[in-house]
Length: 185
Image (cartoon, rainbow, N blue to C red; front, side, top):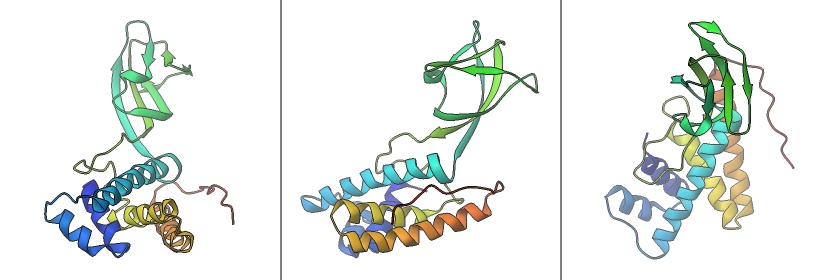
């Protein structure tokens, strides 16, 4: 799924079909339209990060090597949020986390971790695909955009739909038993 597709869907949700048509036609909006698209892109990045950290984790597995057994987080393919498992030759390995690196008594490891998505541009691909979907992302973007613009009632309405969609997606995930974060009423 492309970021641009989510932004176009959010524009349609917000009743800005004129900008959505312009953007889908390959034209770059100018003036106020460009500001709206930039703000929606900012909102997209916030929504993708929120989903990855709280609701639908992005998981990656990779092999790493280190002669000293210190695996620096900057050397990971993605920015790790939580280490799920570390194995050496197919067996679970003990590890210790430090602020800048992870220590394992092995020169080669397999590590599985949840990661935070990188900042996206309009022509980037989303880290999510079918498990989350364009509609859910667009609802979150619309809710964030309305909140930024001071449209509190509209933001609340889109936020409710967004939360319902998140609940539907979480019910389909293989791991249940999730306690949602507190929400202020």
